[in-house]
Image 1 (cartoon, rainbow, N blue to C red):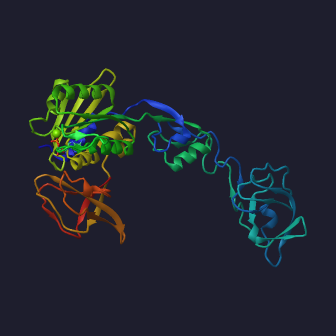
Image 2 (tube, rainbow, N blue to C red; image 1 turned 135 degrees about the horizontal axis):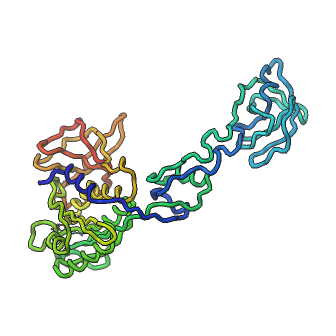
Length: 410
Ligand code: AMP
Ligand code: MG
């Protein structure tokens, strides 16, 4: 059976980044992926300005000031933030200035307010000599007009949004989000609106996978439930393949009499690359590639068990979506960290085993705590709160409490 690491590499090789972009409003760009380099249109700061509330002076005038022998300057102008200074500072003069205000011509240094004493109405005593150019933010000190500020492939979070706003980008060019078709197969499934009859369960995978896709930056296209009926399944699968950038179906990939997905994929012309992976949960996994006139797309036939479906998404589909979305190659890898397990982790040693639980930072290191209750691939109940999967390699049957374990951060 195919080892997990090999399946990961095959999947990454199968999917290709979408290159289409769209221009969107900056206020809607949070979490999106930048598609172009952003070059500064301005110097940052745009002009020399004060980093303090205080007085703008000529350093040469005040270099010898002390509290015993303060130097007195005439205050010739007041410069609040947002105001354009009207005159050049001459020797013997100062301007009252506030944080973020333009440094007036002639001044080169700011004396902080706390080191001064205002006397009469228009004079100020400098009681401690500043250092030359103190508290002046020089024009272009952070970036020059024409400097690259952001590179294509960056995720737009609060810092990048701040930079785009500061450089005047009200619209931003981002990669289009991948459209991911989701369909659930199984005669036992009903949607949320329906009353459960004996033998029926709610199609929880549809909702779980839609949430997963959204969190991974994709647009879920929920195609609903398809019964275990070859003709209906063929129609639904071919519609999904024709319309989406990636297809996820759950169920119907095991060896049961009603497991048609793989056969239909082959009939529809899919190039089936993966049939099963040596992992637990998540062994049944069918991955097929379809050539379409516009692009090649990948179909994931995921196991129906709710935990297996999600583990396969976290372990494989996530990486595919990361690559398709336009993120740089450096992020096409699982987010592994080393943690200490708080209790014994056991496995059968035959397949790479994934156990779900919570990762937390404590005593200076990461600790993994196994979710309580049954680690059955059908038990979605104890998945609640899961933020990490601990992995037990093949041939290992126990990782004792206190031992380091590789953890996939979700
Ligand atoms: P299958 O892979 O079709 O054999 O399904 C395996 C198990 O997962 C069965 O117990 C199904 O009832 C369950 N299952 C399949 N699809 C779903 C779904 N969409 N939502 C919740 N459970 C499912
Ligand atoms: Mg089924």
